[in-house]
Length: 581
Ligand code: TPP
Image (cartoon, rainbow, N blue to C red; front, side):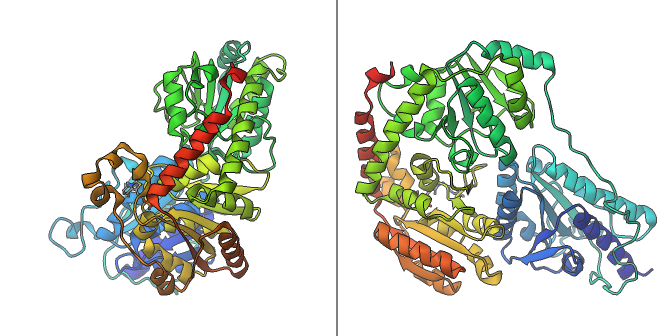
């Protein structure tokens, strides 16, 4: 075999192994050094290639797709800064536990550190953000080399998909010539096995019965308990956690990204307005829990975090099969490394009989109801950024996706997206909370849904305008609800806003951009909604037509803060503390 055939056989074995392991989607950015990987991926009948020119957007597009699929998606790029542009998406994938296979082509060893063009040091480029790094051997077709590269592919998928899921980095040096021979005999079948070359089994961490008995003993007589659910809860665990909550009669503090607020599960114990009512002066001591059981990441609500810090429960159990020690309150008393669903299903066996509703759970439910009623009236009477969330929750079709930008959108969803039986999947990049890559992440998610809405602020939208190209190139359906307050609205809520001299220049940062031009550039429609009715019409039309739609909702930063504060003050007045003592 000549060099080209050896290179082809080696890379084809790698690509074929990925496909056999269910990696059927790859986001490729153009470049020369990655030629054999890109071409062979494109040639494989079980792999769909999504072309994305800008590697920073490509990284986030793959991240969104992998989030929505909950299985590894691959990325392929050439050497040099192309690979470095994946960095923010890799960081987000690491923190939000999203499985990505980051495949970067590289120069062969003799061209490293000798001033060769487009050659940077790609060794451990993503540092500890990648769960595993491998600098693969140079391609050859010897039997051992093919067995090796098939094993590398298997290991990469296994590591990426194992708990905690996350990115792995495969750096592949390739020596010229790099154009593969697509007519090579037995292109895909060199040393293949019937299924994957190596299969892998993922076990679920489980506690011993003694450990369960110990926790059960601790919890069984406790009435003042809370279950707190954050991002990254697995769909299949939702029902088990709802049943556990009902067994214990512990209210469920449901972060919007826990998916506990939407879907057809029982919501009798779901509390969705805590961020608002915890602001009421004097209420927190009345709500102090003795026991907390947490599932998923720490919720978005800062008010909740501060409450848990100030009113320290006797016991805080953080259940995480990946043992990630995710507790910024530093109040946890027990780190429980156990599969969340198994934990929720098993614990009741160690509690004794099911509890009936009690004054503790009734207090939380009543408070939640009163506050929600008040919020709903306020949301109807006023038009501000929070009202957009309410309208979206009414209008989003069942089984659609809502991707929520960072900054105020995720906070407004936390405050104003109430529990609904309609199945709507809520996504956000809360691993590292970046305002970058959000458009691309939403477009990645949109590949899995008929309707996807992205709720985003203008600065975050600007940050990833490049990402919109994917909508045009791949005919994706995305409705962008662009909250345009001309700058960073969140900063007006922070103490920095009092420093008037520097505030607007350093934090407000108005850009004055006219986003209709972006819509035009990427061949989407553009409309403006000044009222709830206009938003309804624009949303409905976008769902009907499909494609890319940008609906801008102009708002004013200062007025937006004032209305938020008025609403919280109204809500506080509705609560009569003596009812909850
Ligand atoms: N850069 C990145 C990549 N991520 C960040 N989180 C920040 C900077 C800091 N930051 C947080 S919110 C924000 C900035 C710059 C302003 C966002 O403005 P916009 O998207 O318009 O949303 P709004 O604040 O108006 O809700």
